[in-house]
Image 1 (cartoon, helix red, strand yellow):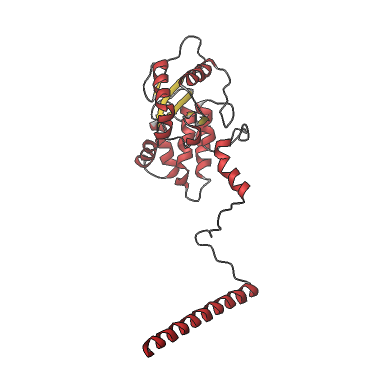
Image 2: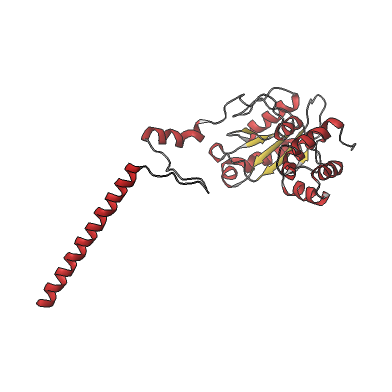
Amino acid sequence: MSALDDKTMGELREIAGRYPEKRSGLLPMLHLVQSAQGKVTPEAIEACAEILEISAAEVSGVATFYTMYKRHGVGDFHVGVCTNTLCAVMGGDQIFERLKQHLEIGNDEVADKRQGDQYSVSLEHVECNAACDYAPVVMVNWEFMDNQTPEGAVQMVESLRAGHDVRSTRGPKLCTWREAERVLAGFPDGRVDEGPSAGPASLAGLEIARERGWTAPHVPAPGAIAPTPSKESAVAEADTSRAESETIDESSSADESAAEKREAQ
């Protein structure tokens, strides 16, 4: 794999410059090198380490910790099938097995291009797509494909391989892996408002709360300074405290009187 070109190196430095501590830019920097080279290469690790002034071992430790960073190539469209608990029982396991059979590959492998295919596809099982209200869920280059079925997933994969337009359930038309990685690096493609961002299942609780007038209690942010009470609220609070004290005193006096009567008897 050749070294990163000047444009990519300049954008890596740009990302590092976004943060007060430039090492905080490592995650988007790794996405950027994936958009340029298709994976995290040894050359990319060295480049990130040099720009951030940290060791290559530190960069490699991050790149191998998160599964979104690949040390091997993936397809133009990377298909992730959720096999965590809810998606699994709703059909995720069947979807994953059907796609493995159809593509003739295993987990985290790339299907060979056939004659006439415009794009390649890779397959991975993931633990959770954080979209349980639409289980079983498949993601393509990190965009949601909700309420999937085994045969529906096969049809989607075939459309992707043929180069047909496929739209995310709650997002834009699917782009390639490298294009998606560039967006994750912080370089927008201008399509953030394309498609709905949430569906009815996700908004059901919000709608119920609005119908019933429910609101969340106000919780001050950590470290926030409590507002200074107004003169009126301070007086009202003092009156309340005084009334509570008088009630307690009266109760205590009544208890003492009752005790004295019992002793006299």
